[in-house]
Amino acid sequence: METVIQLTYLLSAILFVVGLKRLQSPATARKGNSLAALAMLLAIIATVLETQILDWTWILVGIALGGMIGGAAARSVEMTAMPELVGIFNAFGGGASALVAIAEFLATPGIGASTTGVTILLGTLIGSVTFSGSFIAFAKLQGLMTGNPITFPFQNAFNALLFIAAISLGAVTLGVFGSGDPQTLFYVFCTFALILGVLLVIPIGGADMPVVISLLNSYSGLAASAAGFVIGNTVLIISGALVGASGLILTQLMCKGMNRSLANVAFGGFGGSAGVDRSEIGQRPVQSADAEGVAAELGYVNSVVVVPGYGLAVAQSQHELRKVGDLLEERGVDVKYAIHPVAGRMPGHMNVLLAEADVSYDKLYDLDEINDDFGNTDAVLVVGANDVVNPAARDPQSVITGMPILDVDRARRVIVMKRSLSPGFAGIDNDLFYMDNTLMFFGDAKESMAELVREVRELA
Image (cartoon, one colour):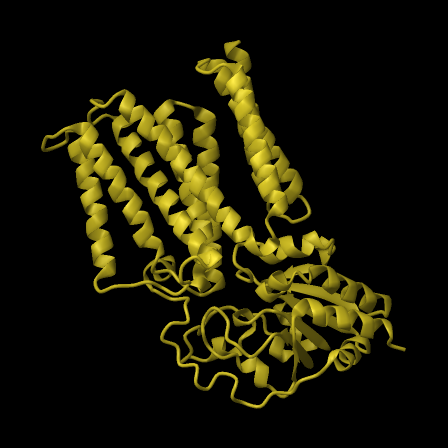
């Protein structure tokens, strides 16, 4: 039986690695997710066989309840709320890891300054920070609290002092120095960790939410890995390390996509619209068009590049967009989709959105693959995107200077579908809207796209 258990752990670890590898491409992501889920199921079965702590009845009840709740949530949550769902998952992952560490400490409160004791405190700290921080991120994304940065004087210094205080309290708890009731000190340590999670996320604004979600995902993996060390479970160490490392790599890629450092994201208080001078936003003249005019611009050209943004997700117009693309291709137009790494409110948001509408994966191009093609593109259709196509990023005086953008303004014609001239998450005006080669197609994306479908069908 011991051999079977260890082989099951090994198979689970292999499936985690393969599943993560397949998440690299939208074409294989679903299978990768299924493999990772199977790996977790095998890990649970092997753990139960090894420990025999619980009766199988309760394990099956837990799997059934968790499966029903997860399945209902995944099917009922709209695509626009997917970042919030990911935030909740991060919170539960971090919280579960913290509870494992807390339970182990309560079982052996006098553990002392051993490797296990340090690991327990580390798992509790990271898990608690992830738990409270993820719920703050959820509240910001859900609109339950302001998406603007919440700051106060000497905030970073206060957070640093709180972190040092938590570490010092942990050292006292383990008896490294000082004395006191370990259990009481541990509870205070947990409280400090929860408060720290809140304070680390509140100064981060809406524009940086994709980075925050990715970073908290990394934290949840590190917490799980620490929990694995606490209970001596190898597969939990491996899976947690995989999530932690991949989340950190993705966070770095997201920061690169905004030309920002992780420190600037975490401590810069950027990403909200508070304090932005809006007096001149939307005051310059623009050229606008209706559905008939836009259909003519798109239907009689050789190439079209579509740039989706968060507005597409809000309007849930991805299916109509695919119909427009199909109709244009029937007319011989070469249609591609340009995906910016930070478009939307979580990593890969636009890829998932287009996959939901059955847009072929081979038509999706990332920024580096397609940016050089815009100069030779006849028309670009921007649907609900803003900051990621703002030429102000090339202005040394702009707050988004240096941010990698999709160079859509270099195309012969640019059509922007948007409700209004309101700014994006960065809170600044978009120079693209006022350029000579830009047409604004105002209205709700879903209704406007439905009109566009009809007009393209009627083209001669």
